Length: 314
Ligand code: ADP
Ligand code: MG
Image (cartoon, rainbow, N blue to C red; front, side, top):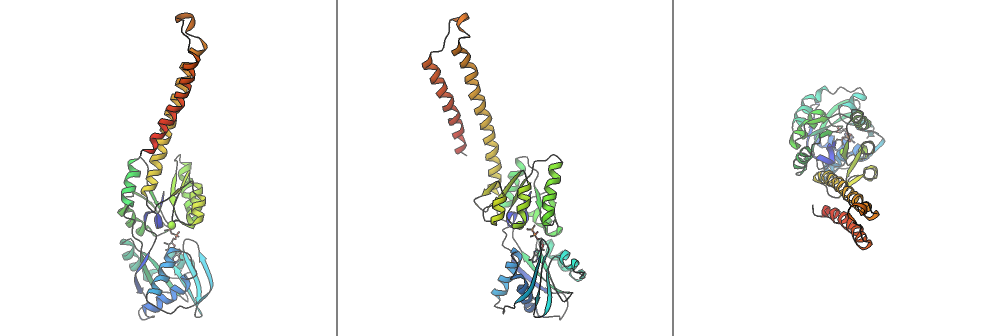
């Protein structure tokens, strides 16, 4: 299971477009300024990108109060005496706001793999901000390696299905679980586990921590949030999905070496201990001298260590 934002993608979204969906409602810069006032209080990567764009355009900063965040959906706050809601369709629907005026815009941005954050003021949808979060250059090759290793790769995200599908096409991922709320990520993994699958989850965000803990193997991106790193079994030291493929290949090689080592450690003893104890003495007059026996004992340790050292050469 691969989380989309920050794992398959760079996790550094940037604003590509601002659309006023209610003609003449307000200038695009005002829409951005009002959305940024709410997002300044949110910790979501999309929120940081919207604030960065407001700063880039040197728009004045408005202050917001009564901030509320809905995990996996969006946020709301009061700006200049007006109730402002930013988030996805589910967020607006939660507040009984009609999202139909955004349908066409959502479809158009999603087909390019971009996420649109809807902006509603005082209960009416007024506009949207489109953000692009490019797929990491290394992701497609890493996914191919994971599939080559016999794994089923699944993209897991809270984002819209169409956005997730555009990203998965680019990364070469065949299965997509989209529009999953943070708690749903845990359930999705538990469902697979009940179906007899062993699940490894790669993620980076605060929202991913419970899923990383639920998975049989939780793998955190090194640049991820502290709580994701805490919850994970393995931490990738570079921002590259290839490191996750390395983890899986290295652990498989390690298990193979452990089995070989067990075999050799037992094989030496199974053969040499009975000889040392004299099983061949009555028939062949053969005994193992204590000097040779201790040499064999040491040799078995050397074999195991030497065999293990082969792991360094890969
Ligand atoms: P992901 O699984 O891609 O990391 P999240 O679960 O964090 O996504 O969020 C799911 C969706 O909720 C986002 O794609 C976005 O549409 C919306 N969302 C969440 N928080 C915010 C926010 N602060 N501002 C705008 N939209 C948000
Ligand atoms: Mg994420």
